[in-house]
Amino acid sequence: MKAKVHVFLKPGVLDVQGKAVEGALHGLGWADVKNVRVGKTIEFDVADGANAEADVKAMCEKLLANTVIESYRIELA
Amino acid sequence: MKAKVHVFLKPGVLDVQGKAVEGALHGLGWADVKNVRVGKTIEFDVADGANAEADVKAMCEKLLANTVIESYRIELA
Image (tube, rainbow over all chains, first blue to last red; front, side, top):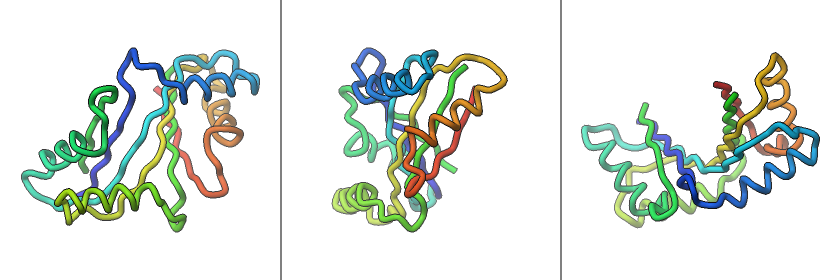
């Protein structure tokens, strides 16, 4: 089973990497680009099974996301 | 218009961050996790228009992805 985890900074947390990308895009002439946020995506294969979703959720809570400042979204396929 | 750009290392390029995450997950007891790849997701607002997709493609080629070792996928919504 393929799992995809998207990790983003929570709204309100300053995204310095996003700000840097936004500044660079403005500098390259795309002045209309706004609200740039940079996140991580982690893709991996996980064993099939009824508890795959619970497993991936536990992985997020323990390792993949810093839940104090980051939110995550899980996609299983 | 909301744009999402997913950037991943091309297959065959060693993903050291992915390997590190995989090792950590194995250490935490999820021994069945395989093929971990870590990528970036960049989300931003871009001006509506017929050339939005071409614009975002140009941003990827110029700044967001290193096309020598990374591939990217664009989602517009």
